[in-house]
Image (cartoon, rainbow, N blue to C red; front, side, top):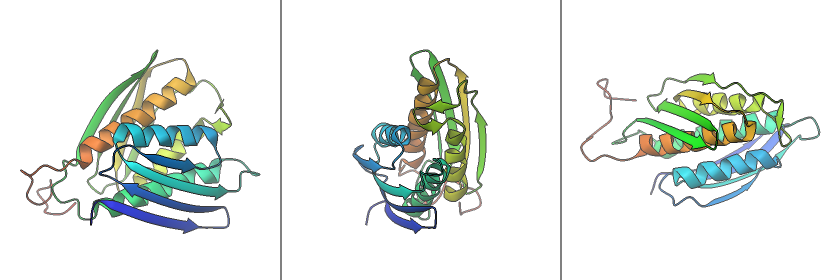
Length: 195
């Protein structure tokens, strides 16, 4: 069957279809209507070696908020669905990623307890046409819909594009690590017996 998920979500604000294959090769087909978000999701797929397809029709006449947040919601749902019972996964992942002058660090736990720590000090309101504050909204939506604990920190950086890009790449690499199968883990990585 494979570790994949297909999600559709339609509201009065957005209409989204998403496919995710955890065991992919980094292929993507992304069209959210928000150029910078497209760029970040393509990076996510490539650097996490996930196959990702996402199409969004959103109320961009208002702004990008609903589109970006709802993209995070469906990605989180897809991660949760694709991993099902989380049997034999490593559960934890971490990654440092540099992008020129910026350095980002992401640590995550797929243990079912949603939480987000977001320690990024953007210095501009926008990157492209996307508000930089929406990066945090995206990751909060992922965390709470996947049941994932995510800690994100940009240790330093001055270019806001580089800072955001380093975060998305580090998240992808940490998630790839956490979703890896380990045949030494016979059930789940928890003393409770479930995660």
